Each structure stands twice: as C-alpha cells, then as structure tokens.
Image 1 (tube, rainbow, N blue to C red):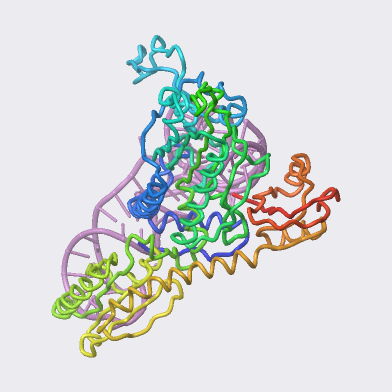
Image 2 (cartoon, chains in turn orange, blue):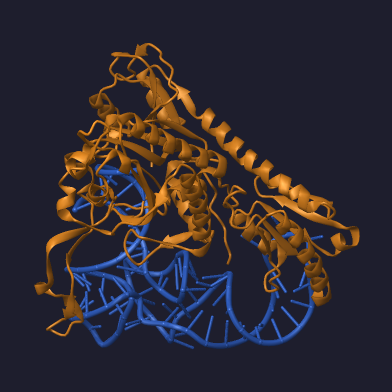
Length: 494
RNA sequence: CGGGGUGUAGCGCAGUCCGGUUAGCGCAUCUGGUUUGGGACCAGAGGGUCCCAGGUUCGAAUCCUGGUACCCCGACCA
C-alpha cells in the first residue's frame, strides 16, 4: 500500500478530493456498486461502533430505551402531515412490486407486472410517520407518558449528489422519538438531547459545536422548532452535526394520538425527535485530519496505542516481541486499547506511516537499543512529536497522555473555530469574509425568511443557527438594514 | 436534471489528436537474494473482454454512431 495524500490545501476545490482520498486510503469507506451508497470498511465501522456505544449509554442515562420500527412505510402515512410531506416525500425510494420472474424473452430476471403492490411502500427517509402510527396504539392516558424510544437504523434519501459519510443515499443513524404530556416537557426533552449531542461532540469527538435554533427556512419538515449543533470544518465550511426537534402536536394531530389528561380530558400528545448519523464520521475526519492522515481522539480511537518492533533478524524480533507483550499487558491493565504490529513483511517506517494515516493516538517503537537501555520511543499523533522514555512507568505515562491528547485535539479545534467566527456589520464585509476567510459570520438579520433566502441566493451562505446563548444587541440587518435585536451565525455549509 | 471530465492488469496512469511490431509504465502480488531506528533494494515471474454494441478499414485502445458506468461542478438535502 503506497499511500500518499495530496497536499491539504484549504481551498474549496481541492478539499473534497483530499477528503475522499483520505477516507479511502485510511480504510474507512468507499463508494459501492450502488450509486450514492457507501461501503463502510472495518476500520471505519470500528470507529462508528465506538460512537454508537457511547451515545447509546448517554441516551439510556436519560431514560431512553431502544426499539425498532419497520423499514417500509405505507405511502399514505406520509401525506398525513402536510409540512412533512413537503420536506420528505420527494427524494425517496419506493417499493412498487413484491415479486420477480424469469424474463419471458429469456433475458434474465424482470419485475413481475402482476405483483404490483396495492399501496406502495416508502423506504424510510426518517421514521416519524410509522412511529406515530404505532404510538397511537400505545397511548391512552397520561400514565402512558412519556414514551422515550430510540432506534438505531438505516434510512434512505435518494440524494442527487453524494459524498462519503457526509451525504450518502443510505446512511446509518439513530433517531429518538418521544411523546410527552405537556409542551414544556417536550421542549425540555428537545433541549436535553441537543445537550447530550453537544457533550458527545465536544468531550468524545473533540469537536466544538455551537448550539442554537434553526431559522424557519432550515427547520425540520414538520417541526415547530429545530435545535442544532453546528461544527466547523478545516476548509471553513459549517457542518450540521446533529439535530433535536420540538414537533409540537403536529404528528399527534396527523396520527390522531390523544391521551386522557389528569383532568380526564382528551388532549393531543407533544412530541420530539432527535438524531445523529454517520455524518459524524465525516465531521470527525474533516475537523482534525492533517497531511499525514486522520487524527483520532483517544476516547474514540479503536486502537489507542500501537507497538512496533524494530529489529534485525529473528532473534531480535523475538526479544522485542517478548518485551512488547509485557508492556502491552501493562497498558491493557490501564484499560487502554492496544495493538502489537509484529508483521515482518513490512518495515517499521512503513508501519509508522500507516498508523499515522489511521490516526492512532500513540505509537511505541521498541528496538535493540531500547532493550539495552530500558527505554522506548513514544510518538504522539496529534503533535507528531516523539521522545525516548523509560519503559518503567510507561503505562502510567500513556494513560495520562490520553487525556492530554484528547484535550489538545479539542483545544486546537476550538481555537481554530473561534478564530473563524467573524463579526460583520456591512454587506461588503459579509461578502468579503465569506469569500476570503470562510467560517461563521456573526451578523444581524431582520428575522424574515425572505432575507435569508436572498442572502442564500446571493452568496450560498445560510443561517446555520441562532445561538442559544445569543446576547441581545440592537443593530441593523446586514442585508436589508432593517432593525435587528441579535446576531445570528451565517456560513457556507455541507 | 443541466455543465465538464474519465472508463486500458488488483490500484494509479501513459498511449487516443496523427490507426500499423507481441499494448506499456509505476505501485501492489509471487520467487530468490541482500536489507531493516521513518514509506527498502536488486534480479526474475505472473497478471489484459483496452467499458459495451455496431460501423469504417488490409489492419482499431486509437476514427465514426449509439449505449452505459463512474467522478467533479450546480440544483436537492443530515
């Protein structure tokens, strides 16, 4: 495997090619035979599994339980909620037949025209409709509430243009769907879950995010309010990394889900839904990688420490192997995920490059010299530095290093992100910053969808969010000059 | 669906404009040897439906017609 990444230039043109290259060469994923679909390779899936596991535990701490709902949704379910149809009914895969037959002309297999479904089935693009149709049967009284369900599933959206992890026709995600007694409780749930996402992004992925409300234009189809975590990639584009929706009573009304309240009166249920997807993998890659490849946060890295022997001849290899096994055991005793790479068909230098490409946080190299001196070479992926340390206490040292590396990757991303939030007050500045610097632009907006739309058409930038912690400030809309009471964040996005 | 590009060995490509030995190079693979503290080197070997179909020609990877697949840029979106 001769791998050479193209130089990482931050220009838009090269960045997507660079990204593609990295995803494939690091062994994370590749395009499949099916257009727009992605094969997630074992290494990529191992990272996703770590993410899943952590998120799943975080959900369960809030009382959420896992469940599973069908892949197929009757077409009629979709038309129940008007806005939802508008947003989702378009780019969907549709099942129209249930049988194949041998081609009468002998040209292989064809769809049996007699096997047409009476009602077409939609391959879920999201599961609100099928779930609310189910919840109807689960809910009678306030005593049945809240319902807090999550499902890990695949969904299909027939996107016209796809990009590994960031936008694929089929993707893996989790979707939480909750039902509540009151508006307040549902809103609280919406906020709780976006904060879970924030915590996961920042503490596990080292990905600083801005939490905020979506503008009406960018809101989920069928939601009253959408909360989002917005991250910034190294090319200056924003990435919506997770969303939590307050659905009001829209789906309860569409599917007629009522409960008897504490006064014995029938009321519609309040709903939320929230999700993150394999897109997070894209975020992880784009936020931290450098010209040598991936940089994985220790908390998510499938392998945290790799040991590489350096040797001449069988005898030295055996000696190195023996000592490495002992050190590996010490590391494992500290709860670290460790791999020894004693392949003898590639040289040490090759392995070094390979593990850098794969983003392994710490690499240890042990050779004859070290065996004699009781030392070992320790290399950090995040800083690309290496030093020779004593074998004595190395497990302790590395256990501590994991936290340091985790903190360092986050800090680097945070500093970059913060340096890429620019306050602007004039349209000239807005355009100038957007074109030459990128990143988030903090600017006043008159609050109308028309203005947002006009800005999007003029610059491709959209309102990424209205930050939760936005400070009241009187100003004038950067586009129309009309009065505004707070700043919002604009950016070009994926 | 619009605009551009590319289909040649497992991967990356040259050759196509201007038709002519047995279709070539790098990486990977296999064999042997020498190496081994940052992507080893030498020698040898194996590996091809030149995207598909049709046409022109003594002769097509190369020219013509039609199809098809993929990539990039837009519109759509997490």
